[in-house]
Length: 426
Image (tube, rainbow, N blue to C red):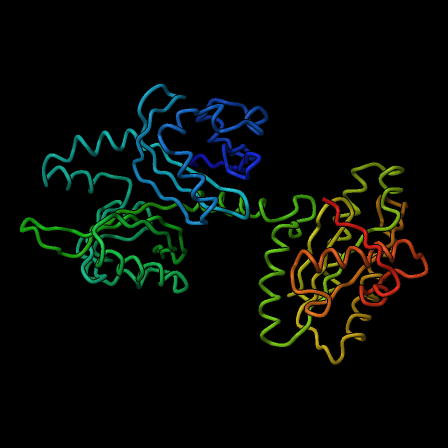
């Protein structure tokens, strides 16, 4: 498996990114850098690779985080301070929330082999036929030639694919990526890199990364495209795992705060067009500290996971649930009918209270009880900004917790009674 790491930006007082911190890394990355995982986590990129400043590599990573544009560098050459020599790597980086996922493949050996074999057309042919990557010639999307390595990779024989349209093998939902690749090659001369899922002979689909560019024949004329690809199933699975960890709460699997705010902004825009209302519910588990203190943190974690499951079972599949820290949850109920709002909200509140107040079986013969207080704010009546709605729901929650006769309060039910609003927790 290729090395993968998850970076968090480090900013100066002016908010400028000056370095990156390692949040996570797979075993391949730790072995490549010869640093134990527990020692690597928390270290800064420039502690290990200070030359990334002079080489411009750090600036490229910063651009990914600030612009959101993915980075794809093939055979990127730099002075490798770990190995003490010049290395060539294929580098891929994408932004995930406020973080960056980076993976790379050391292709130094492959680069040296390519250079040695590039002296003649025959040497190019030998490279194609003996490479583990699949090499092919395309003309208007039709396969004109494909290397024998296609058999080991996807099970097809060369004769199965000759004179066939390559798009027949591409997963329909990924077809647009392939068509964009063809269009880009027809209009530009540089190498184009993309990913999609391709059909194997056993009817399974595999993620591939393809590199394609114009093919210029011996007469100097554009004559279709030449491309190479290899499977990246393990790489994609690792990236998806890291992305999920960056967007979800590790304990419960629910959304985290940042992703919840992003999604709230998106559905708010949609609701503004459709005229529906959205309820933002800020929830806090009552008596949870007692469970933690008397039963231990492992039991507390078990209760939190069960609460998350019960909340999911009490709302609609399209509603959003996030754990934003400790025993605090946010539930976003979308597409509410403003003319029938109170009964809809009351039904949801009753379901949630019934679910949470059901005793928790923590050990054989032992039960634990908790409750839940909630504060509710509505979009667009109580605000249109995600942060404001969350603050107002939190303020209503605070009011509910200080008035024990009620377990749920709506921001507008009491705001005129008091000008005191509890500030959001950092």
